[in-house]
Amino acid sequence: MSRFYVTTPIYYVNDAPHIGTAYTTLIGDAVCRWHRLLGDDVFYLTGTDEHGLKVQQSAEALGLDPRTMADRTSERFKQAWRQLDIANDDFIRTTEPRHYRAVAKMLTAIRDHGDIELGTYEGPYCIACEAYYTEAELIDGNCPIHLRPVEQLKEENYFFLLSRYQQPLLDWYEAHPDALQPEGKRREVISFIRQGLRDISISRTSLTWGVPIPWDERHVTYVWFEALMNYLTAIGYGDDHDRFVQWWPAVHHLMGKEIIRFHCVWWPAMLMSAGIEPPAHVLVHGWLLVGGEKMSKTRANQIAPADLVADFGVDGLRYYMLRDNAFGPDGDFSYEGMVARYNADLANNLGNLLSRVATVVGSKCGGVGPAPQHDSPLATVAADAYDATAAAWARFAPNDALDATWRLIRETNAYLETNEPWKAEPGPGVDAVMGDALEALRIVAVLASPAVPAACSEVWRRIGLPGSPADQRVPEAATWGGYPGDLPVEKGAPLFPRKAG
Image 1 (cartoon, rainbow, N blue to C red):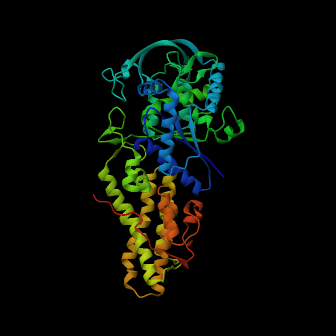
Image 2 (cartoon, rainbow, N blue to C red):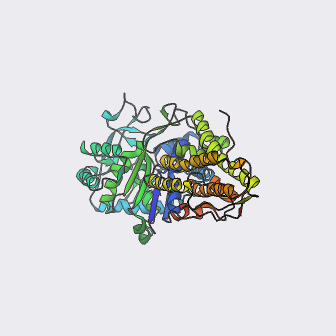
Image 3 (cartoon, rainbow, N blue to C red):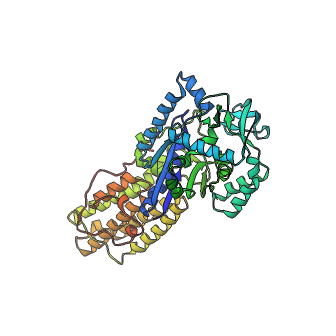
């Protein structure tokens, strides 16, 4: 059994969940569901980032203490992920005692290696990013991400000597060409490293909302520096060494492109300093844009997942987010595009296939599903669909995986159109065609279950199968011939009712 560890970024608690954060979380959930079908030992981590100046100021603006605001917003993220049927194995909060212990252990290891020194920082800082910038990186004096004014900070800080890791990082990426994907982002990171690395401030004395520096409690740890350590905390670092070494470094970090520097420059260097292997895989995706702009609280263009669930259902939202946006480049959300995708793929293809099969089995086969033909023309289609689907999930390409699965749906609908079993007299010919269609539905229910788990469970139930698709193991469960026949097939309400444009 292979271990498969996936993380999302941990989300700031100064803001509410939106479809941008949902996008990353859904990708991780779907890929993990696929690996559970493979029989892997899966650990899926998400959570909330709860310290820092941004959180402290947001809490003060609401008349709250930071912990109260963190408790409230963290719960909103938990509720949002439950609503979207996210099957995470852990939800970490950086205010938990286990995280404080892990941070203290790693900071001490880095200091013992001689890579932390006391100094003074002075320069531009974006509170929204919780990040330092150089003057050259600013756009008209503004943060390049949020396009808002930065603040000039000057205070005594501890520094991590990142500059020592320029060559070790370049050597690491040369020796591990697949560690950072896609390739364009890998080139971007290597170019940044080659320009020269500056030491980075890792503590603050101007606020108290953070993890104390273990050897100097006048300082709290810079939020990004300690937040990255959550990926170790959750698998036992600082508490359970045996568990930690079982899961690390074979991790898959998922993230948006705006935090690539923290994860692909700082994080591997921090790990090297602490005597820990860098992460095996970092996968970077683009932004989910609305009207061509990145979603942000300041631009008031955020869309809550709950608003779309009300219109399209949980699986309708899950399918659109995974199918319409290729992993890697920026995507653009539109309500009209969501309606079109929902109607075309879910209502007209999958939903219509299930409905027509159940109707014909009811009228021509006495409501009992026949077994498929061993030499069905759909058998080759199903085998090809599995191969393409599996390859796409393996490379974190849910849109390609779903396109491959939907080819089997489209071919099965075309097979029914060609044979027109609804016009034929009951008998072996109709039984053969309907058995093939039921077997295709069975395989589709398995292959599509990482994306639309509730709908696939309903397909499974209506065609008379016990258990659920999530209980199956591929590739065996996707092999042609698994539908046994002689099972009751149930007609029901439309699986995905059509939406008005």
